[in-house]
Image (cartoon, rainbow, N blue to C red; front, top):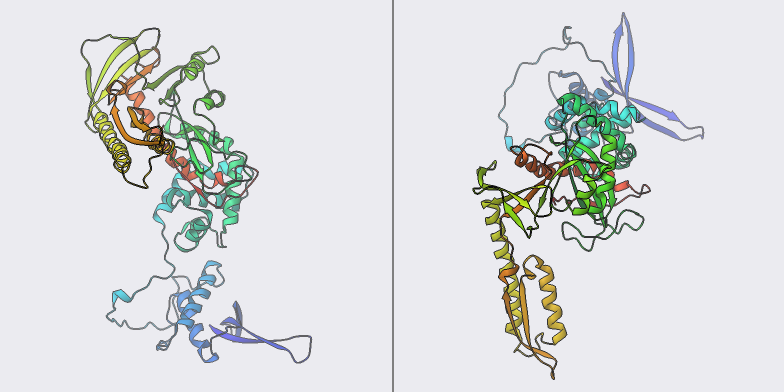
Length: 539
């Protein structure tokens, strides 16, 4: 290979342009032929005396053979960088076909010359990660992701970019800007999907929007494929609701709204995500709601959507919920003639009147070996079955949290009390009441257990002393709750295992957030959102 100078004259007299081409010379019979491999441009910054070194280095990188018995020892960084750039383009775009390995090579083999190398000075060039990307690609092939996306009308290139986006969300969850950088610099995902051009964040935004526009169809097709792979015919339906907060103002969004944040982000707008999974953890249904939607308020609509998406024949589903969803109103909806389903849920409200049906509690252990006691009870005025659950580990956890919050509350109250006699301290009646009220609100889990009394000087309008007392009668037993279920839900031997399924919602919510991260950025009128901070919560 060699570099050839090309002169091109403009129509205007006196103007001449010079650029260079990489040429491959070969013979056909007695005649020499030249093949243009690549236009190199003006090669600014490279002296013409270095063109031969550049051509030789490109040929070495492309063919894998040394072109000379005496390598150029004066090779500089500019020549090396250009050689790496041009050779990569030649190989990627298949601009030059090298000699097949079974053919004899004309070039003379160079004898080996071993030298010591300082490993600390070695730098990697164009290295890529491929392990996790290949694993995700195999999983998506098993699930038929490409066929599902193609069925929505996406082109081959669009399906490839969409799968690259899903791969990034599974391995390197981040914004589209960072995802583009990761695909270009760190990952071999583009090579796996034969994408040679740069994948900008705008293409990733478009792929996310296209998937969201067909979210329902994609979920249904994907769940059908999962059922085929795993022969899953579970009748268990687990439901929970979480919310995420936005970092931007979201002025153009209809669904972003202020509400009760699961992560205490009261100053940020929220969006709600309802999720229903089966006993194996596969998603049956998901939907975004306004950020101020209440957990019980979404249940009827969710149940209708899930039922319409399921093939219910002889066996009706069992709805499994946690305490935040299992209101009396929602349980009545499940029992109504419209559905008539069985359910299992947690009830942390202690029934006022109940009778033990067994004298001795049944002792079991959870997956970590912690002791749990189960006692079957009958609640007056309720037709459902109840289990009184006592967990020793949960009791320790709740006691530890209670002590921590109690110490914080009493320390802040003591600080206010100690400052009352000092000049310039907070002591006006309304200000002291306001301050104490904020403390109780911030530590509401234990704040409502305290009765606080104030000694006031009405003439001066100040508080002279504060006393507080924890009311033991207000405290609830620690480590205890009740499991409520219909008689036909499952056998009594399996009811505890059925309840434990609700704990798997947290892991599924996390995976769902990763996949839907970029999708939520454009769910309302294609409004771009600078950044969405994902939070997940197990109610």
